[in-house]
Image (cartoon, rainbow over all chains, first blue to last red; front, side, top):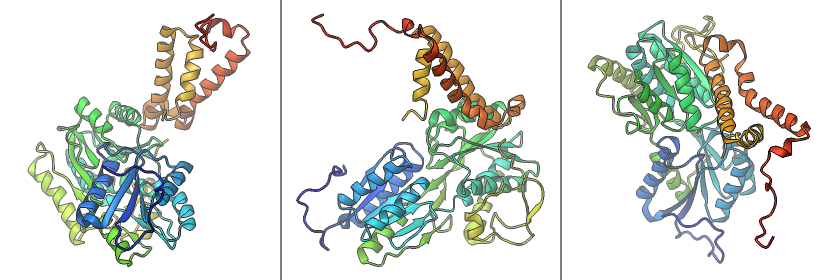
Length: 349
Length: 92
């Protein structure tokens, strides 16, 4: 169990031999079987890898707002020298509090703001989305997918676009309808959104929210299926989960903590993907025909060996105008500021 | 915690004048309106005629309307349980 999160009264001065204390803040609970679960698995991996050299604490259900600043301050006061803030909306507060504690290192997941002691890290989820989109293109009967998004930020828009680009390589008529629910974690709303989509003839659902609620609805309604997001969710939807995008944060957490201990940590942006193993494609559902699995594997392996990039032109935007010329690949900077939909996306009303 | 539904719950109780069956009906109605937003976003035919932002705002607009109506109705308190807000003192 983790030690209680209290200001350590009478705590000895932090010496070299003491373990590095690492704090994690999660937006949901560690048993959401998705995003937060995956981060917590990463934390456990870090502890296992570095043994006595680290010690970690975590705080769950930290809202994206002023309250996260208080939580981070408490973590610093409890002796944390490295803090992982694992949700997009913590960004502004991380920057603010990092100025007050220059000797503490902060790492913000999926963020874009860095400073002297704030680094950002992310994973190329869009690579996994391309694999899911390939499966959807082959398996969907109606050629319509739904995408439950939290907020229309580049991170999410990129996933929607990657999914439909991959699906349209298989079925050029394929469309995707994103529905934004303005929260990362509200199982009731995720499930309602999934029901609304299914009632409109959508038979594949992808979600960029934290839990398995949409997959459970997919299972219940018997549609073609959906995808695990963050972690394997087959326990909730053994028939409906076609595959899953698993976030493997452990190696990054272990390497970062190691760098802080060694004094080699620096503020940078880390954005690995399938190749580095930070994004992992889970098991394929056994109901999927072999040739479809082979097609998905080809997309996966193409992205691993670099022979394929899902954002290589020609790409049209949702109005049909050419946005990326043939043979041109979008740069990381283009991806991180993506504010347009590709052809095949039915933009939200 | 309540994902913005706290005030709606308060309004619902007043709206239903503390009667459980009316409350059920009211809760169903509010739930329906909240789901409409998702249907409108997912391309649900005629629902898309109203922007999804307006659907999203509707439960809250209804809440404000109900609270205003209730507060200008003079006999509102007669529907409330008689002992609501009175401290329980066994000696009395």
